[in-house]
Image (cartoon, rainbow, N blue to C red; front, side, top):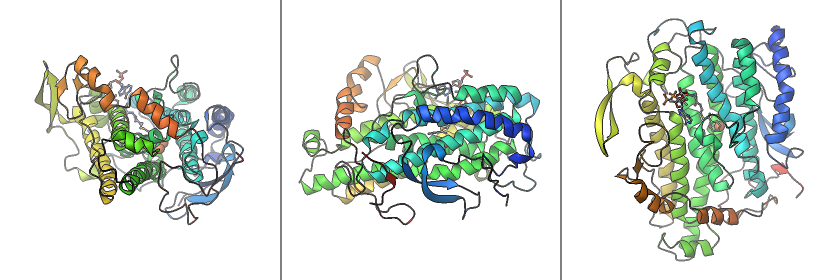
Length: 478
Ligand code: BYC
Ligand code: FE
Ligand code: FE
């Protein structure tokens, strides 16, 4: 196993042996810290937070738990160990040795993929920077910060690739990553969902469930890459990603548990009786469905167009594969087709699309299936309280801004309708201004006492790393 060097920048890539690279990264580091101080969690930078830090990449020993002040978190560069004699697993160069350097002809495309991946990491930190001020518990506050520091580390992972393999262009891109800002009119983040406001905790849980899960699938696809350093770095990122999705899945589950449990306790049988549930200071289930609709569809857009020549090129060249490529039989994908529902003249027609051009949709399929597993768990929790309500993933035609459905309007079942009809129903399907104001109103007072939990969410089943739920995960003076 590769050892970890305890240098200024912790790493398992022998950074000390490459002085030029080390100097370049050490020059970027203060700019990163400046960005973190400005755009990271606001109001908690001097607090001790019980965080896990990657100190090695082995499965048993990669995480160390201790109190850390966030600006002192040891953001390191960790690559999964190399696979001996690794070969390209798909596309036109199938079976050839993987690349340890960037082939000149793929340089621009690879840089673009890496920059796009990199850009999402600081964007999410920016989106979440005020959430600590409305946290439902100290346990949740700590989880938020754990996610934030790890997204910061994911930025480091991508900046390492840019600095190591892309020369001056890479260094310029690394600077630009600290200059764009989520939601900024003039210098926005690259992908749509990362410019959306995420200013309440229901949105945060939906984001970590749905949007971080796009991260999981993009990272799975990139870990198949013929560019071996990208494969190794994304493989290690995936181990951290699992926790982000845990935060989302259990966060939404705890809200469902609390709402359904209190509905049962107060004899509220009709989930559509929003007022009765809101009188109890809870998130009603129809509003949960609207937040789900919003963050799921924003995240569907992140997979790119259904029919994409970019995706075909990425696959052909070996730059980006499918999630768990080994599970497919045909790694060339030159002959098969994908039956796609395409809008044509106001109707949906099924068309066969060449498989390589459908790779974004193939990845989206795997994502949708994975999302459904989580939704099923939420529904089992609601049903366990005897409440008759089912959360549903809307059709992938609903509320889309990228791809073949971007220019049509559809209802959550996927039926096409006019723009006027859509606008008339919009507030029934997506969070209205009033819904957002209501959800925000539940979260005006933060909970900084480790013994307390906000009224609108159930306590977690367990604490972190064997500590009790009411452990002082963040030492914060209110
Ligand atoms: N917003 O051929 P098309 C994560 C552009 S999340 C804006 O359809 P392609 C995380 C596209 O660039 C994972 N623009 O799609 C989660 C292209 O532009 P040009 C992030 C978009 O190229 C939570 C045009 O539309 N990782 O890690 O296959 C917290 C047509 O493109 C969008 C990655 O995304 C959009 N949604 O792109 C923290 C992996 N979608 O050529 C972190 C790297 C497409 O017309 N990215 N466009 O100028 C990629 O592999 C691909 O670029 C995409 C799909 C998946 C984005
Ligand atoms: Fe990430
Ligand atoms: Fe993440």
